Length: 107
Image 1 (cartoon, rainbow, N blue to C red):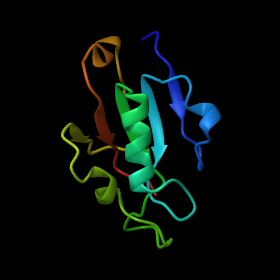
Image 2: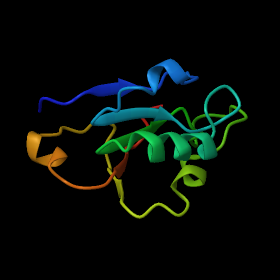
Image 3: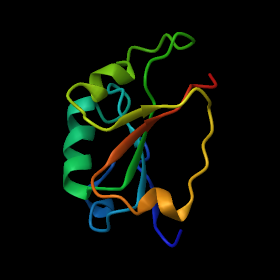
Image 4: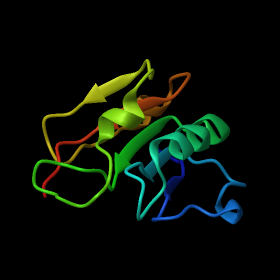
């Protein structure tokens, strides 16, 4: 697809924010990682084509972190995928705006 994939790590430092990506894997759960509010600011700043939230509370996780719903509040383009994997083609990135793609957690 000729784009850039960017992994937000646990704590996304300012040195990583200079080059926006087409696909952003972004922690959203807080406590150990970036929280929902900071993740939302990062998405507004970088404007990637796709965002896959990660590191959030699930039914199988009892860490003291927030669920993905906190990050999704007020977001317009959200697609929940009933799988823990997804494939993208070049046409998936030929859109305007940002789409948030929520995968089904494997753990």
